[in-house]
Length: 292
Image (cartoon, rainbow, N blue to C red):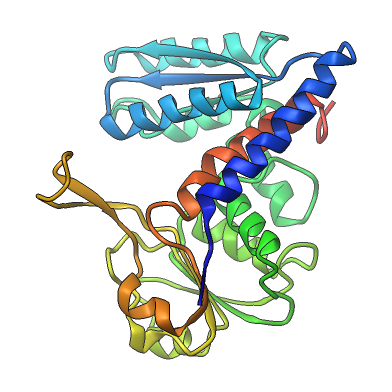
C-alpha cells in the first residue's frame, strides 16, 4: 500500500511554477496576477482564501484580495466582477463560494469572463472540458488527475467508480476519467440513490469518493489492490484537537488502506492539490495558454 502524498506533490508543483515565473519575469514577461473576491466572514472560506494568498506568494504571483460584507447586493457584486473582467492587469480571478443566500451563485459565475475563470466553473469552460477542448479545468478534478499521473497509477482501460455527482467534483471527474487524453477509463457514476452501490465499488480498480459523507466507503466496498482517492473533507467534532474538530474523509481510512495499492489520506491528500491547481490555471491565464 502506498500513500499518495498530496502535500509533498503540491509543494513540488509550486516550486516548479515559481521557477517558471522567475524565468518569465527575468525575460521581461508579466508576473501572473490572481484576484479573489471574498464576501462575508465564513470560517472555511476565510481559511481557503488565506491559503490561496500564501500559495500565490510561494509561486511568485501577484495577488489581490477584495473583501466585502455579506450585505453587499447582487448588483454591487456583479459590478465588482465586471471591474475585474475589465482590468488588464488581472489574469485570473475567483469569487469564493458559498455566497450569501440573497445572491445567485450561478449568475455571478456566468458574469465572470470565461478567459479569466481560473476556477473553471463558467459554462463555457465546463462545455469545452466536456468535449476535450483546451480550457480551465476545475481545480479538484485537475489535482486528482495530476496525482494519478505523478504516482503512475494506470488508468487506461480500468474500471473507475466516481461516488458523487456534484458540478464541482463528481461530474467533471467522470468526464475527465472517461476522456482518452486523461483517464481513458471505463467510468460509472454512483450517488445516494444508486442501487447495488457496494457491488459497483467492489468491481472498481479506482474509486474516487466525493459524496460528502464521513466514513462512507468501508473495507467491504473495496477490492484488493484498488486505488482509492478520497475527496471528502467533513468537519467532525474531536475534543483532542485544539480547534475542537478534525477533517474526516469519505473513506474509513484505517480499515480501507490495507487493501489498497494507492490511497490518499485526509487531510494531506487531495486538499493541497486543489489550491495548487488553481495556481497552475493562473499560470496558464498569465501565459494566455487557452484564450487570447
